[in-house]
Length: 338
Image (cartoon, rainbow, N blue to C red):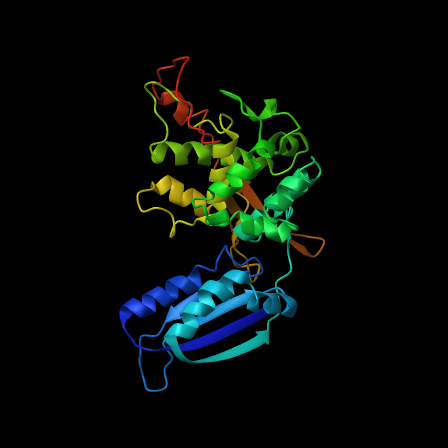
């Protein structure tokens, strides 16, 4: 493994600048895919030789460190702030012996993910290839999308001079799912992406989480009306809304989401099941994975296996939804800009 340490001197020693700089550095977690872990510390001694803030980052190898230096979020957000607000910096890069282990009954890149960004790229890469394979090349190129990287960028909040990830929804919702009132994932056809994933056993845990996240988001923002009930919290009711809010899930964090959003939405944004929140550095260290309880390591054939038990289950429709009183009408106003 590679450890990359940078110490910075800030242009002023105000607590406001220190805190803002710390928060911007910490915001890389989950946004920079090759970054395994990071720590940020603020100096309290303020001696003549002190630096104001320290960043410690961890990478699998030198190649990942090099990719990190050119990562779009690192360059456009973090480096821009640091260059504008620092007077000096020093860095140390060195190799550390990595702790080798396997994950029992799970696999990174299948149901566990090194970061939220890694899951985003895997999910949208699959979606991009699905669109290509379903006669969508012309639709993609119409929006100047010629690669999966272009597609990732199109999931941006402000793509096509729109906001709120609306561009992704308007342009590709017809590929995402088949609208069904009071629909269930097992009834989705394979001809649209969500049904394709479900029937091919891809992203199953994430899809079940996504259905609940969508209901929480729509209810908490006031989009859902219960009397008369407009079905706005049903993931399968609108392909446009489902895709827009999927993109919002990946774009936002608990720190950047609207201030009025509920705690449960903020928690869900940073705790997608299967996303690794902390890698272990030794067999006595802990490992944190969103949605799972770490049970410790078990040695088999001289290999350490990390063992987990599923903990957080997001099941809105079996629990909370049943407690809500709804007034059903046949001519409700569907919330669907598409």
